[in-house]
Length: 113
Length: 116
Image 1 (tube, rainbow over the protein chains, first blue to last red):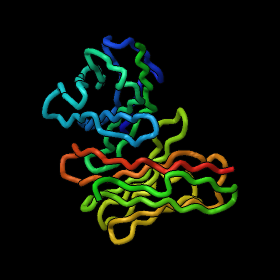
Image 2: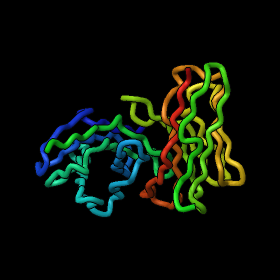
Image 3: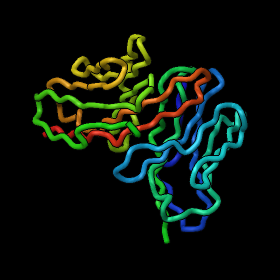
Image 4: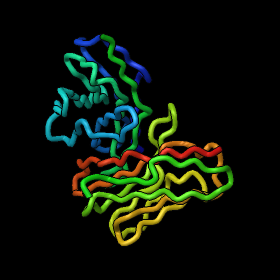
């Protein structure tokens, strides 16, 4: 069975600092992995996805994530945080190749001026 | 439509009443999903429709919850005899189900259900 664990329910960074949001996955088959962002009072928006084409995946708004099989990780990073990045971020893994996505509990990112 | 549309955006209901939540997916998307988002609980999978296949109902928390998808398009999630623990944001998503599994969802803005 697949699952994801997001370490840290809240992360706070200063504007301009590195953003690192952690996600570890568990999967018995090669995983399909996703990061979604949810801005306040909005639905979820796809940031990026890993589909085995490349281990370093670039997404929207300057975010990227690296798939590390040896560490079963898919951490999300951004070199320099903006105030507009304040949101909740969800990591997800697909159940099998055609099933639903299984989401982590989310990490709320705060950006301090 | 241009996006996934959910209605109503907010619903307040009395405990014990039935409620219906509607989702209108992106035209042509064959897959439709319902999730529930509670404070601090992340997204809980409820049910999944894929084309004409039987829906995957494995996430429905009790037999008070049901969903249908008519004509492969609009879906309705029904909660009977609502309880206070049903209070949450109910999210709908749709996708094109392509081989390989590397497809993401498009989410609606959700219906915030409050049971009083």
